Image 1 (tube, rainbow, N blue to C red):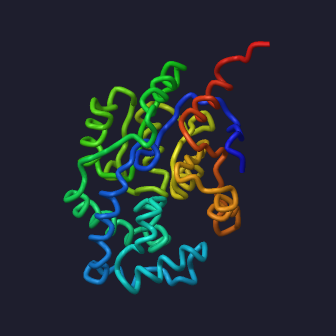
Image 2: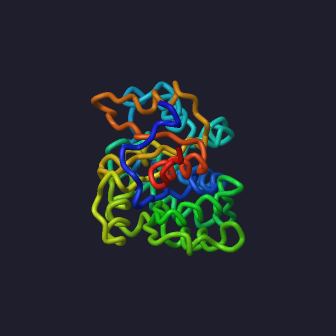
Image 3: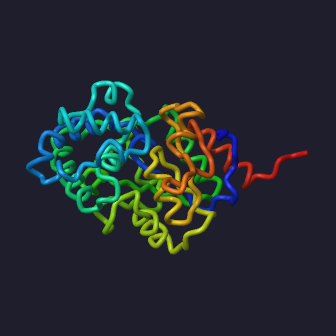
Length: 270
């Protein structure tokens, strides 16, 4: 799937995932996940972890097996810095929403001990966001992160904060179900008095972001900040009956997103 593939509709609204799409908070996130995993049994979650045979990929199965055995993330996972806690909980618990709710709640308690620093994923991220706004596009930010943490992080990122760049912010504890359920996207659109449509682009870095976008019936733009190659992207979005959802476009950075938006909104000169 080419990063130059255009979505099917011009953007009126662009919603962004927060962690690992706009900002880097990976160190704190991995610390908090590693604080949760030793307590799976007392949380009543160990017996609810999927069997490795139920995993989507061989790599997912290996991670599930490692966590079941050692109750921590493999060091290579943390070194690679390519997977979010939402995806970790998805591959551990699959469709078990109650197990994921318990895990996310435990994560919030642990994340409180680690969060603070937050850095843009790209050096000129603010400039790209401002340029999108100048095109007349409404911007929003959504996250599985709790509002307690999001309110702090969006206020301190880049030294001056980014609250003014977004017309709405929806957090995981604002809705009944976190991603991959579509609730956060639908809530953001409701806040903007807009209906779900292809004119809303949702930009996120994880498979759960793509699923949420498709379930919400908006355009899915996969942010490939981890720089996966095309074969791996095809593997994590196989387009099978069990895993049907694939992004409408893939980008490696926000300037690419900006160019895509401009192609829809600014006529090319002859």
